[in-house]
Length: 50
Image (cartoon, rainbow, N blue to C red; front, side):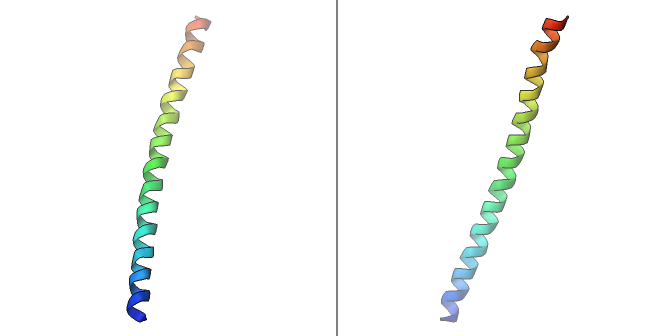
């Protein structure tokens, strides 16, 4: 039984590591998208004010 628990624990660690990396990647992509969207929203406001 100890080998089975070891394998399950190893799989648990690998899945958690992969999900953590995926969350970091998605978070950075969303932050880039928000910055680009904010820049696009500001341009028409300046164009109409001038």
